[in-house]
Structure formats: structure tokens, C-alpha cells
Length: 513
Image (cartoon, rainbow, N blue to C red; front, side, top):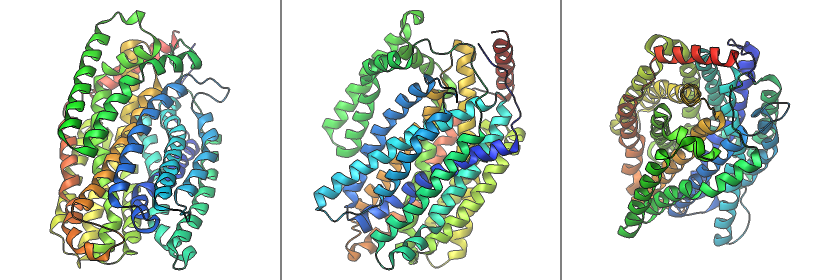
């Protein structure tokens, strides 16, 4: 039975929702921007080992996003499907945030094991928190333009949370550590973990779930999970083959990759040919996604978006520490970028109304790629020009995630309109899936490039030879992913007129159920 939907959201609810991503980005932006340099320069892991750690954990964690999306869709409480998970997951997220930036006095091998354990714990807790949080946007309002505005508030909050971490973390580490960076990182995370808990509680208390589809998943949570486990190899094998190919880059891993992907092609073709009414719920979910062209394009485009942003942010700490020669200036750079990001996120809604979401996406990709590529020619002593080009690039880049998550809501509406079934959590799990897989590949690629140039964070004599690699990672490498994203976005099928028609049809369908 559907419930009435409210299109316009009160300001306090938009702000309350935004504070949740401010809290989430105390974790996400901190890990994305500083965890690599923490591992190599403070914790004491080699760049190559850290690269594999990032890749393996992020890719495996991408599978849990899909599982979490299905769990959230099948959750039924008096608080809704998605809000309770924000509350339940927060304590674990705060604890692993601290543990991840703690340096125990143990052997190098034990340190690597500890890093895997704590990083896996952090990403699992983040999954349990952020997949339902992202899906919550899709059920707070049925109005696609209002979702775009809500997404703007969300990412303004996200960038504000990132500002706290990326802008002030170096100074807080220096303050608390007094020369001991290991202690400085740990004590700083105590502060951020406490703030995280407060922000998540506010989000839980101030938001509401309003949109209920006229037909939801038939099976319960237990039956759905059993069904999912039977089909999990079809999800994990492609990720495993990609991981092995990226790690070994040899003929054997390449052959395994080709075999797995060919087998997946046959499986998908057979699945789509079956009578859909006879499929289990999880297989029907997979069919719905595989035949949802907007979602498939958003999945690929979101990965390219995360590669673009992840590489840029992942190399900044190295770039300022070694190329510019001023480590603390990275914090000032992050602050300025995130102030610009907040402005970019907040103006996305109005610009999307004028240009359309698809066109604005393409403009944002190309504009940010242009100003990012310029970094290849910037001299290390021209700090004003470095900051200026960074801000111009970020103004466009800030619109990308804002548009991406609101367009996932359009893809969820499209799925319900086309298939008469809706799996909001599963569709929105694409958001955190590409965040983690794209972020994992981006973090790994940064470290792989640095390792290829001979970088060793514990050996200052290797720094000079790695400077060209740092310049490429700040310029042409991320710009290439942005250009590819703009090209892919040309195939996106949902026009503003089509989105309006889908919204109208769904409103009629829900009101008559």
C-alpha cells in the first residue's frame, strides 16, 4: 500500500540530511586524502603493499555494497527501511575510524595484517552506514528537481565535513603529536569520531521516509539473503579477475580475466532470456538492473568520476609535500577547494534546471578536465596559479557527485516505471560501489605510479625521481578519466521531459494502489 508523498522538503530536513554526509566525509575524505600518506610515511608500509591493500579491500567491499542494498530494501521497522541503519552503524564507524589511524608497536608483517583488519572494518561500517544513507534520498521526496536540490545540500554538507578533515587534519596532527605523527593522527581521530556520532544522530532524528513503492520485494530478509548467496559468485568473480589483472598484469591474469568476463556474458544472456516471472527475487533484481540503461551508464560514469576525483585528491598530500615543498600548505589548499566545492554543490540545482542534468554533467567533466590538465605546466613556486587552477577545476568537479546521486533516484524511478518493482537500496548501492571501487583503483593507481617511479616514503633520496609522476597524477592522468566520462554521458537516455513523464505516471500508479 503506498503512502502519500510530499514533494517539497522543509529546510531543517535538508540541513539535517546534509549533516549525515558531513559526518560520513569525516571518514571518507579523511581516508581518501590522508590514509595513503599515513600508511607510507607514518605507519611504515611500502607504497606497493599499500596499493594492493587499497585495491583488494575496496573491490571486495564493493560486493558488500550490493548485499547491503538488498538488506536495506528488505528491512522493515517503525523508523523505515534506511534511517535505522544510520543509527546502528555509527558506533562501529567511529571506532574503526580511530583504529585505522592507530600505529601499534608490532612487527612489519603484523602491521600489514592490522592494516587489513582495520581498513576492512572501516569500509564495512561505512557500507552499513552510507548505502542506506544514500538510498534515503530516494524516498524522502518523489520530485526529481527537489531531489537535485537535496543532493546539493547533501554534498555541501559532504564538502564541509571534508573541509574539517582535509583542511585541519595536518594542523591537528601537529598539535596533538608534538613531533610524533603516530600519536597526532590517533588523537585527531578521537575528535572526529565524537563529532561523527553527533552529526549522524541529528540526521536520524530530522529526516523522514515518505515514498513507498506500490510493489516491493516479495521475499523477506532471510530468504533474500539465502537467494543472494547462491548468486554471489556471479558478482565476486568479475571483481576478483579485475583485482588479479591489476595486481599481476601478466598473461595468466589476463587469460583468467577474459575467461571470467566471457562466462559472465553467457550467464547474462541466459538470464535475460528466461521467463522473468519465474526468477527468484535476487535474480529479478539483477535483471532489472541489467535492463536499466540509465543505471548502467551511471555505474560506468560514476566509476570514471571517482577515478578522476580520487586520483586528484589522493596525490595532493604528496604534491605539496615534495613538489611544492610545503606540507602544511596542502591543508590550506584543501580548505580553499572545499569552500569552492560547497558553492558548486549548492548552485547545481539551479544550473541543472537551466542546462538539464545530462548536459551539465558533460560541461562539468570537460571544464574540470581542462583546468586539471593545466597543472602539468605549473611551476612549483607559483602558488597563486596552483591555487587558482585548483579552484576552477573544483568548481566544476563539485557538481559531478551532486548530479550523480540525484540521477540514481531517476534511475530508481525508471526501474519502478518499467518493471513495476523498486529496489531503491540496491540501485543506490551503485553510489557507494563506485565510490569504493573507483576510489580503490584511484588510490592504488596513485601508489602504483609513485612506486613505478621508485618512490619510498622512508628514503628521501628517492623523492626527486618521482616528481614527474606526481605532476602527471595532478594533471593528465585524472583529466583523461574526466574526458572519458563526458563521452560516456552522451549515451544517457533520460531527458528532462522523460523524467517528468515518469514522475507523473508513478504518482498516478502509487495513488491508485
